Length: 369
Ligand code: GYE
Image (cartoon, rainbow, N blue to C red; front, side):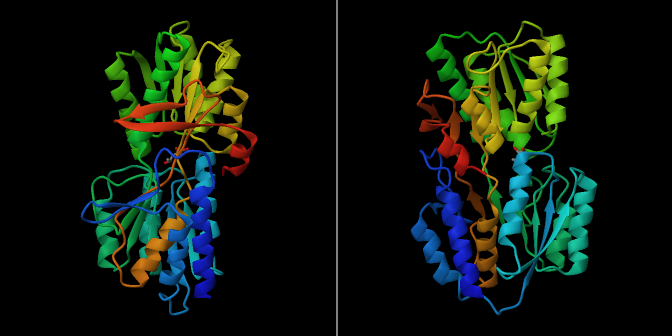
């Protein structure tokens, strides 16, 4: 049973590490408590984990409670699927899944419910980054290790590990790509509109902060930046109001996830505003799930900055390490790519590090989640 689990885990890890193909803008890395960063970017690493993991079990099912944000986006669906694929009985787990419907009170309640159920581990994808210390102390008192995924917790360190993405880097990359693209095309940026994700979510905070830094550096005007709640309806509603308030004043729209971009496209089409590679407005998105990439390939979205939702295999590895009495790495960063319609910009620099883009082809779309 354990060997089978370890093999599945290793395969999942290997697949998620190579799934996107193309060139990598950042490797999946882990950081230990001393701040040292190591890289786990090869099939050999995944294979090595078979031997390591296969010694850790007593054959009992491990109960895992997962307090998921909700079901607001394609990204979220992929994240949920990743956990449901990995934390199966076949792999030695019983998963208790709660969809918190983007409500922070429900999420705290879910975590307290897991404590009452005496689960072995708790996974939290925190809707917002603050308000966590009390409930995490309760988990600690109950002796239940917490693993945080995706969004970060900023007001408590009472968890064993975090697995996710560097949202500020995603925002910086979007900004630097936009600068290189507009220079290459000879386009002058007249005005930028941002549709943010959920207020208080670290994904929103990081992407906003990263892009703002670049806007400040190049002297761009951000006309407005409003919450679209990471949903298609939210994106459409905000864009409808932008089209009225800023008619003729903008030529860049930044949507902080794909679903908002889908809504924004509907609003712009209805308002007679053209977008994408042949349009008047440059449209940038984040997440790069399959549907987002299809729009990039079609030229409707100019560039899509990936946020990798397939965290579960890495969470399982953390749990295996805790089961074995080892101290897991405290931070695990997912591998991510920057996707574009064409290679007008093939490389650009973020904080002195060269970034390469992946031009979206049929194979790229097929390999994506
Ligand atoms: O970008 C969005 C989702 O937290 C990174 O949440 C995640 C974000 C993702 O709803 O689509």
